[in-house]
Length: 382
Ligand code: R2B
Ligand code: URA
Image 1 (cartoon, rainbow, N blue to C red):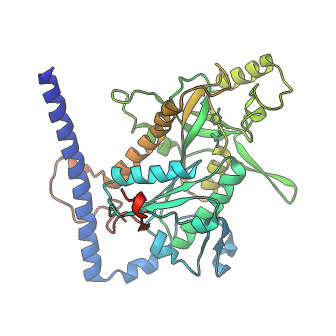
Image 2: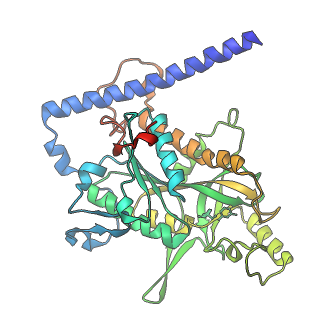
């Protein structure tokens, strides 16, 4: 009906104007801060800045240079504080393509732009293992599959944060998972990661001896991300729950469709029902290492995964690819909203149009454009 269309349109425009106002106000504050720093000189400020990470290897400061082998970066050829010092969010997901798309999406969501003739550069291209894109204060990295892979990436990203003297970076994994008793398409935000024995710890062997690191995740961060879900507008559910982290997709997740299977459908049913009774909402393959390594470094971390099937109903993923790629965007959407809110929300935006002098955290690092770019080949230019 024309009347309701008109109302919808006015409502949408008002919403967009409101959101733009918030971004413009935050950018004005950053500009004011930069101008003041220029006037006062920011040297003293920079010298005092150290990373907020804790519990790291005491030998790191002696490594000159420190070579982040799998990222293809070294402290003697890259000025870490200059290139990465403004990073506040490190987002990671399984595949290079998904993280490149996420980088462009987050760029748009936080109001940054790059020249149409350029494209985001994969900063880790030389390492040939992971992809890494930087969009203002957001780093987007691919982590591959499983704890050994994400663990290598995390060691090197944590060292990067240390060398870059980053303050309170937040790490978030976005990905897919198998749901336990949830509707496919549901987003699960992990409260704690557990192993196949339901033990909340990441076990590693050091010198042949088992060492266990706790795998709790930041409760308040999980709540903040959950609050970015709008139950009235979003057509899917978002829940907080425990996540089982398996070291394999098939036998480790009690599937009946692997190349090998030495248990019965009844044993599988009993195991999955036991998980459900213990508030486990999903199964994936990286949360243990992610939770353990971030919390050891005093980094707030969150794991946000969409369930692409309900494991109580089967093992094979039969959902069409178009539907899967829509579902994969859901964790990205919530995380982009969280980043946007953290960067730009200021209580005065609700009642004031005046850009403030300075607000700690607002739009920090967004002043200089989107980030690391390269000229796009003609056919790739957008
Ligand atoms: C989710 O999906 C991948 C396996 O298909 C794995 O990386 C994970 O955690
Ligand atoms: N990823 C997993 O690890 N398990 C699933 O069932 C689906 C995605």
